Length: 156
Image (cartoon, rainbow, N blue to C red):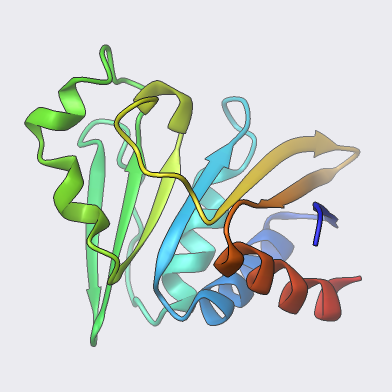
């Protein structure tokens, strides 16, 4: 399967789509989130984390680099690498420990961690479009292909 392009009309649509991504991933995998400031990366992440069952605030990890969430047996990590000065900083924070295969890792600004991040299962690129957003989902593993196929059935 190739890329999947979807249009979200507003923030609620982004949150609902995030919830659907949570169901499709079953809380395991790596998703890169790309887009300019204000594109909606954190909104989509919030939808995914709430879709996993988290109740309460979902903060942007801009200053902490990572926010962990433990939801029943699911572990999710929301990374925001915008303020990262050098990708090597990720080594000092023990980045490899987060990617043990049993967690869902959402990574905003993944290009800032180039060389220290694993290959994603899927990359989601978000761009403004009219009043809403355009999302381009690019599968980058067999798991990502499965996710995109499931989402395509529902959203196209």
